[in-house]
Amino acid sequence: MHRQTTAAPVTESTLPGPFEVGAYAAGLKRRLLELARVQLVGEVWSFRASRVRVYFELRDARGALPCSMWRTDFEATGVTLSDGLRVVVGGGCDYYPGSATSSPAFSFAVSELRIAGEGDLLVQLERLRRRLAVDGLFEPQKRLTRPLLPRTIGVVTGERGKARDDVLAGLRRRGWAGRLVWAFAPVQDRHAAPRIAAALRELSALPEIDVVIVARGGGSLADLFAFCDETLCRTVAMLPVPVISSVGHHTDRPLIDDVAAVACSTPTHAAETAVPIDCRAARADLAASTRRLHGHGRRAVLHRARALGVVSRAPREHVLRHRRHLHQLVRELRATARRVTDDGRNLAAVHLLVLRRIAARARGSQAADRRRTLDRLALALAAHDPERTLARGYALVEDRSSGDPLGSAAAARDAGDLALRFHDGVVAARVDR
Amino acid sequence: MNSQERSYESAVARVEEIIRRLDSGEAGLRETLELVKEGRELVEYCATELEAVSRGLEELRLEELVARLESAPGGPR
Image (tube, rainbow over all chains, first blue to last red; front, top):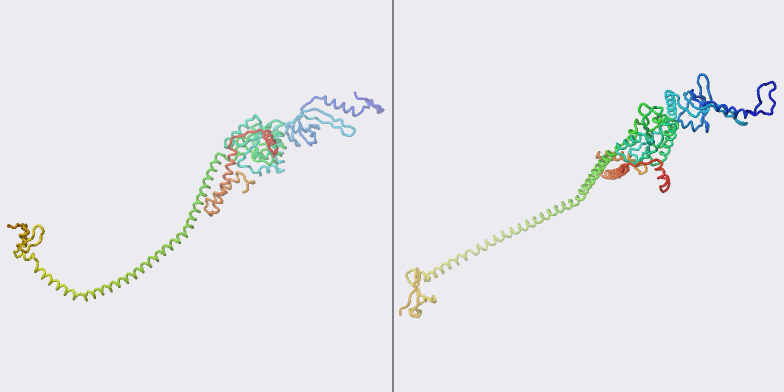
């Protein structure tokens, strides 16, 4: 029971007391805490946050209740509150008894909080989407340059989700086999958004990371609500590394899709977007480029070589041309000299011939005289030719062994063996003694 | 293009530009040789980049990468 003070009571009152207010307040707190913990439904109004607690009023047409919640608990829900949002809260009455220097306060202490229905959730989502758009947070990520060929890709996803396999399949399809850094985080419960935001911050702080994929398989919009978290979306919007989101399916559009550099319908598609080129095709293209460059280079070198050849041949041909010309001149000179010499020689020959003729003419009369003398001598000589005597029937007696003519009978006897030469032949004879 | 600002996409774009110029036949001899030299360097760079993502997928957890960077000489970058 409350301790009664020594102060005098109000004279005419029949009520007990007076009691010390602090003690009464503490008692009230105890009594309120004894009330059953319940769930309440209503609309949120006048939301505000202090360093450790958040405060709002829960209202409906018939009444209202001040509510408070530990800030850490509230942030763990991933819910963003705004005026008019219908929520279900779980908790119980609480009372802050105050003190000599602080005011007391009653509140419904909320330990659980969720959006009352999907319709409300969509309304809230649209409000937040508009707010982010007004703040210009849809643009920064889209202005980032996404690498055509990232070396290192960060992936934020659930450790056991199917999204992980889908990302790997997408990368395999691109022929990409670089470095993949997994940052595993819960992707659907109330702790998801802060953990995802933290993973994204850590990944983007590493200079090795070229692009980040945030992937989760499909689910209801309520399940995907973690990816609509305002803090997460603001974090993504301001990251210096491009973020590719793949959360849910076409029909769902979580807010992270709006602030990310690219939103994809599936984790496989997100992986293909992270590596926009087919690495196998890129290798083939590179080989083709190499061949073309080589061809151009080779042609250029050949062209240069030909040009140099022409340039280098020019002086040689010039010299050759002059040499040919000189040779021609020499030949002409020689021919001219020969012609001049021949002309002189011919002239000399003519002169010689003339002289010879003159000489011959001079010698002609002497020759005739000599020939006539010779003929005469020949006739005289012929008259003494023994052959002519033999022809007239005489015979010449010769020594058969020596061939000497024998002019006397004595000589013939001495010789013994004779040869009698007639004009038509020789007859052998022996001297008969 | 200096190596600080060089990226695979910028290198590929420049190679394509070089080949277009060479194909046009408008480049003189000296320019052709310079373009071919630049093109070969860029192709070599691209080949290195492609090679880096062709050696086989390396999977790491974020905390492993962080630990590796912290234990590397010079600490985390």
